[in-house]
Image 1 (cartoon, one colour):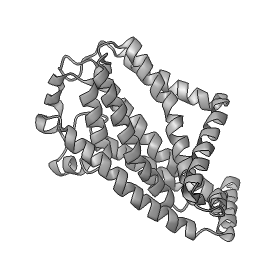
Image 2 (cartoon, rainbow, N blue to C red):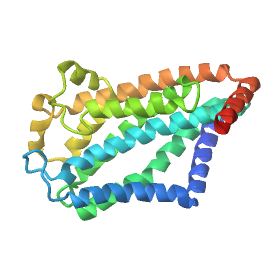
Image 3 (tube, helix red, strand yellow):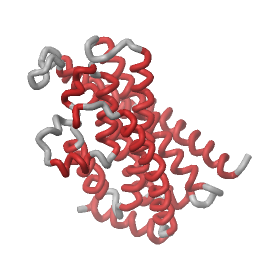
Length: 285
């Protein structure tokens, strides 16, 4: 077995092992269950409301955006925090000792992030299928499209999390350079509402990033054909959406790898010790 493949297998096992440990944690499970039930409760109590004069109910419109938002936040912010934290505690520095250790480390973080997302997605999708028959189609082809879209969305957004984690200097900056930009991007991408009132240049900017296309493809998978009237250019653009997500997967992975390697080269025992001291001083304050 090649060293690279061995490192990848070790990374997958590490990510899965940490996920299994998390399953035994009431705090972790409470987060998944609480978030999922909270989303279902929000849609349930507003199940009879229609969306802006259309016959579409709020659960129908909210479900695709909710799934896109969950994927975007979890897949970007999770790895960013993990990379920033484990750079400061020395985990990243230790991973460089083994052959292709950094390669295995990133695969481990990615594996943990993806499998940790599955319980929440299962609660939201499963609960919606039981509670809102008008929001979830029984068509197998639609479900296949949902799975493919979620997979592409995860792969396209995961490099963003690694890139942010590699660029920030302190873990506290992940909120500033990670969460806040993602919230802004979600707003201009139509996740929280219609894009019709946005300036043309903002609409064009949103289409450069994967979040808009993830939401667009999720709406195509869940909403009836008539809902196309609410989309930009009143058209379902499946081909361009898939192309953008694939492009972000490839180009984002290359960029994230370069940034993480550059960050890792700058790490040393002294840098880790300095980061620990600064974190301790902030806790004292």
